[in-house]
Image 1: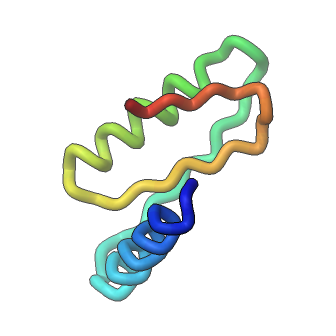
Image 2: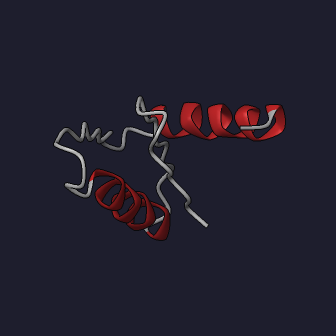
Length: 68
């Protein structure tokens, strides 16, 4: 994430956190091929379509999360 995008992200998250809206977290675990990136991608798209900020963090360096 570029420095500009990172700054924008943190500004949006801080604004959202102060809005009294519920915060949601998802921790996806499973064997290889279970569809964890697909699930995370679909959930992120749902949040963005609803106007909610969304961040996806992966701990798997092999995971390819393309959200275009």
